[in-house]
Length: 442
Image 1 (spheres, helix red, strand yellow):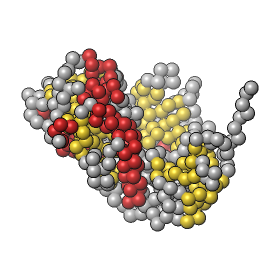
Image 2: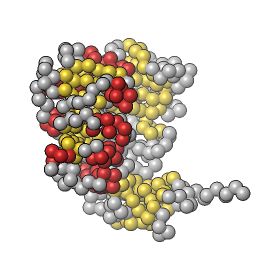
Image 3: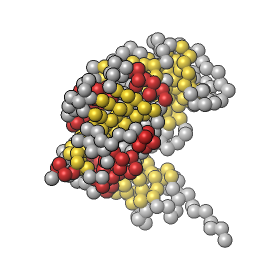
Image 4: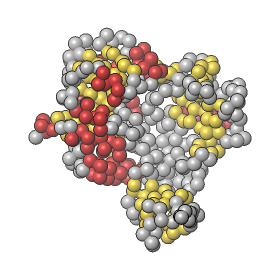
């Protein structure tokens, strides 16, 4: 006999006491019946009216927005952005919180994930419990740092640029993104008609004047004539194969970090905060303390940011192997590191390529995996290589904590952990963990 469908609770409202922050940009509350609510636009300790946005009777949890604040936290401020709030742009999670409170919330999330998934206290992870703001982001409450050097705009049916609403394909049209870097805003993407486009990505390089627009057209649509407020190169994403092709201008931008220029082609990955690359390289190198003659691995190496920094420091007697799955990123990494004779870049997935290298021991490892983390199998392989130190760069504290647990099983302990607020106004946070053999820490 077929079970009757559960009743949707979308639109139902509950008056709730807001509990602790949870990973993902929301806080935890419970209905009077005990059902868990993940509430956005709230802060711990508040009393709010929460309106359900997703969920049904009997579900393990519901998602909701705080639509009325009955008892506000001292950390709450008026939302600076006119496009933020319940049911609107999903790009920012903490516009309603003071900057210091945002960093404390992120620290609480990191601590909770470390404890729950790795069984580590902040002290055991060598972490002082703080999230450090990027240089230039120490602004008073109500002022928003304009930091995002890469912004992907969605496009409405009538051609207006906007941003996706939270957990939705619906587009919130905007005329200005407050967290977009000034150099992105100067392109004037929001002023143009983008009819026929599915998305428009604007890129403003750090350390050069390079600007780029990547267009993804809807099936069968023709590309518009792009005449923006300043010179840009234009690329398009092919609807058939997903490849990126040059329309005019350079197919790459030049990014600057650690005293070197890095070519990044076809809208490829580069850190979006202008201070990110230098901040992370400094943290990694301070943690690893490379020596002349070291053999090092740079896993998930992208266009070679950390591989280049390592090569500079291990010298001609050392060697660096980078592994990266993206074909264009590998081409860029080989170009960027062509002046180092002792650097090699291999293309492929780390879990497939690393075992094929035949490498049985190394001195140092850097890994900067995607949001899902490295995973048990890859961590086990790294742990078997006897590295003196390992630097783990993580954009997701849950994935970091899971992998730190695997490293512990492989005989490594966390020496230090540092956290950086390189995504202000959002729930995202960047961490750098330095690991060493556990026996060394005894």
